[in-house]
Image (tube, rainbow, N blue to C red; front, top):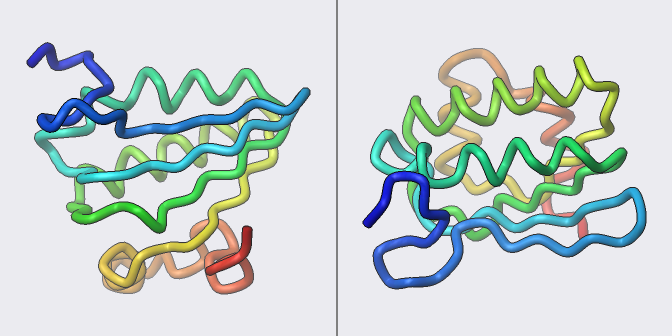
Length: 116
């Protein structure tokens, strides 16, 4: 499998997106680990072309520190580009990592957990 291919080993997309004007809703699924970040990073950063980004993380199965780094860089780039980032449905494993690193406010996680 090509490292830049946004498909996982089973052939399904890791990032499903739906555009509505200046808003994009995206669902990140599967693993977000050191083995997977290269396959999704370009597609993830392409979301920055929209003014409002709704990123649903509820279908992530495994997240490691490398995946967390990618999400934090994405959050920073969204702020630099003056984009609104709404993170929805943070899985427990990611919430635990955020707590471990003292980042439980990524971005307003508690206020947006489980919202659609």
